[in-house]
Length: 391
Ligand SMILES: Cc1ncc(COP(=O)(O)O)c(C=O)c1O
Image 1: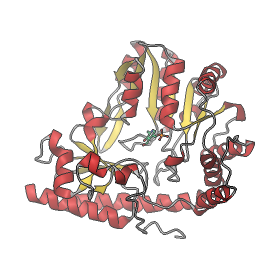
Image 2 (image 1 turned 180 degrees about the horizontal axis):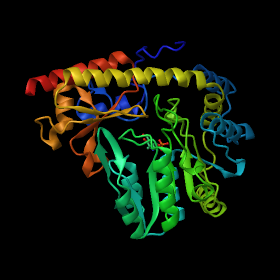
Image 3 (image 1 turned 135 degrees about the vertical axis):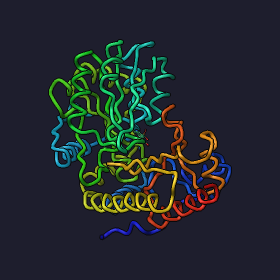
């Protein structure tokens, strides 16, 4: 290993959402924060060097994204995913949630049906409801420790007139890295019933051995023309605060509508540090990423073994990708609506409440394991002790 992922870097008092909102959210500022999805690791050295270099110029006025920005994205998808993309398909967004919201606003009409797959990343619910669209749920189901798609229900919902489907691939919080077969079935059904696909593939880069991320839009020409994909270096390289991501929209009509809105509300400027960070990450961050994935693989192994050996009443839904572990706590003798408080008060661990991801997330907690192993071990030991006191 050339990078030290074991190093504990203090983050309190840096205006960090994860650390500095603890008092407000959990009622204690000493809770171990294992919630919002950023990591406690330093970024790859080429990224911090590129940002430092840019800061030294000392003028941070309006700037453009150079051609090399887009080339870096194109080389990344080609090299990592064997997915060649054309320059003109690319568009900038200051984050993926804004991209998902803008897609709903520009590519559907008020009242249209929009489908999601709970338990799923909670801003999807808000994106549908707050834009005045009708929420349709195709709930995932657990089978042998993995989340699966109910394809019969998927088709039934599409038949009822769904206009847009928001996919999370790999899936947050369940951790499924959807297979080519699963994506092909969903993609073809969406084409058949005329539902556009928004593929939120922000977690694409963090996939564990034995699993392969496939871009939904890479499956066939027909699916490509029916899919708007969002990608970003934000989760991968721990640069979410630089709010720089991209949309990939091969369909000319959809691209026109989307870009017209981006221009109308002057969203295209972006962030000069985000621009240089994206380029540095995609051009020179690959070695770091490989080491990150093996470190996170070790973290998954630790959670899996620790829970199996020491924490009765909790089951890990073993993630195939992402740095988020979905813990099934339904067998614990704690009321569902007390579970998150129990973890905060008795274990001193702050996780995401499962029911925020949909009704079928009730009884679950989401644990962010993008942290040094020592921190993770402490969290697990604390949970073990708290659970031990009530069993
Ligand atoms: C599935 C998914 N989409 C989007 C985001 C956040 O996107 P952004 O911060 O770029 O808006 C997250 C962050 O956790 C996520 O898990």
